[in-house]
Amino acid sequence: MIMKRTITALLLIAMLAGMSGCGGASTSTDTTSASGETTTVETEPSSLESLPQKNYGGEEFTIFGRTAFAYEFDVEEENGDLINDAIHKRNLVVEDRFGVEIKMISEPCTWGAEATAWNAKLKNSILAGDSAYDLVAGYGATIPALTTEGIFINWHEIPYVDPTAEWWSKNVSEQLTINGKAYMITGDLAVTLWQRMNCFFYNKRLADEYQLPEMYDLVESGEWTFDKLIELTANTYKDLDGDSTLSAADSYGVSHRGSVEIDMYKEAFALPVCVKGDDGFPEFALKSEKMVDALTRLNQFIHESGVVFFPWGKDNADANCVNMFKEGRALFFPGVLYDAESQFRDMADDFGIIPYPKYNAEQEEYFSSSADALSMFVVPIDVSDKEMTGLITEALCIASNEQVVPTYYEIVLKDKLSRDAQSSVMIDIIRESLIFDFGYLHSFAMEEVGHIFVNRVRANSNDIISTFDAKEKAFNKKLESIMKIYQ
Image (cartoon, rainbow, N blue to C red; front, side):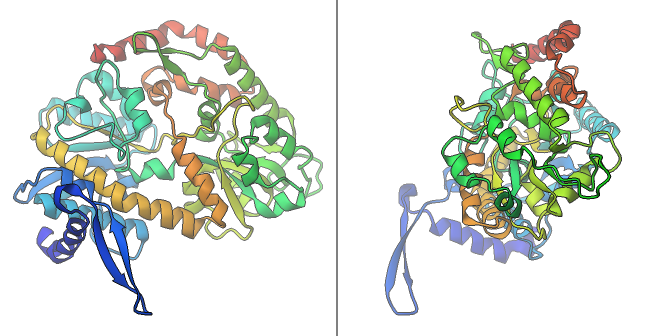
């Protein structure tokens, strides 16, 4: 596999090498235009040059991941798809620079029994001392449950990896580093991190019909709040089929799926499940007046306003929500950036992309997060060569930062999927406001404490405090169990 790619890889390495001068300084490249004028372009050195030059003689670097998201690493050849080809080139550069062959082993891991089986396979392999995997790309929602098993290595002890570097998610590193230890990180190595960033879509034709203010200006002025969402969607319901009942055939202010789309209000409103105490260890933060107020207002809006289509628990619920927005029968659609690729690529009406609204006007910043389908990375304690794992992982993340993310972010999102230039600015805001919550990430390792909020919305119930109180001892016991590995 490496030999087949050598020529292409050498060209890529030469390109990267040409970007770095002596001592890592910028270099100048002269380019000549059709008119004969010469322009000097300054190029930055590749951060790969900061890593030592080592050759592992064709050794396999094995990554264990999820079948549905194997495309983050398992790319055999270019096929014209921009992301596929960028990942292919990234792999080539790392393979040939370090003399390794990237190998992907994947198993189905979507939800429920599949995720349980996936976790069990990984755990059993590690406990058996198989040394089968050099790196693991796990399901962000369920792999945290394995952290209590003590089967992963602290990322801060892995050579060459710098979790604080720009190619890793700084907020994840900060939130998941406790007492100098972090067992999971994510960053530009995961395309899913960017694909699953939450956002609001809005239908531009309907925005004009309802005489909405310019949404991009509203966001940039800081006036895009939950109250403003309620105001803009008032009187937007239309009984299109004339049956005098709220149905999937009608038109609404918001078409709302009922999973991570609800969860993300917590992040948008700065309502974490856990916060770090004075000792640096996480503690629960669900029992606040702000949490109750946010839940009460959200329930009223979703269940009582008459302008929100929320078919949670009904047949074809998600598909009906997507189709409603795609067919131009909903003004707003809370979702993730990947929806622009997977759902709305051929939508007839133009749409805009904006962040989730702020809790209120006093909230200074917009906050975004990435939904639980993103890949989180761990290193098994039975890894055969910790130094190689660190070096190749860091190299892959750097190369992703320099090749894959720019392709996805600038070309796929901004140029191919955004319907206007202003959406690009909004995507910048979403990306720069990315935050994560220890409690939500570890929800399934702690009796689903991070999902109390969404479950209360689904049930149209505001009693989040009594719900937490009923299982507080169990929640605390689970949190204490997780904290043992950070002592």
